[in-house]
Length: 120
Image (cartoon, rainbow, N blue to C red; front, side, top):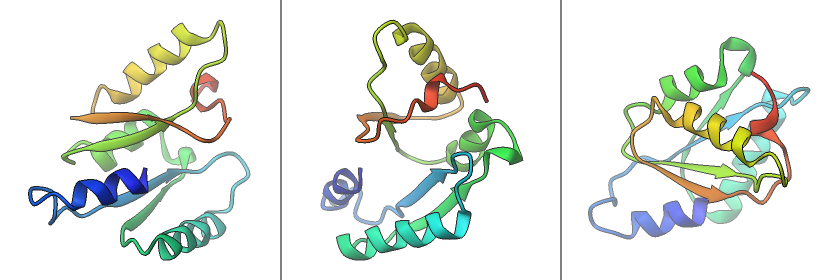
């Protein structure tokens, strides 16, 4: 997703864009440690972006992502490939998550987490 953002910023229309990395904490993740890991990835990629870590205990993920991203020009969201038989559940949750957002680009995620199968 950082590569896509980098490529977009090469375009004159997106050159002044201010990228942000939003990370929703999973259960048991430490906010500071996650922030350090993201900073390290950005440093290695030589990419500057504002980091915002979302704690799902502060509200529903949909409402939190909506409040952080509703006024952005483009949201790039990583998604896992649904397991066989879960496609309808995942699609429904994705539609629900995206409803408060503007333009979104959905990208196949490299993680195997079943984020959209969890209630929350």
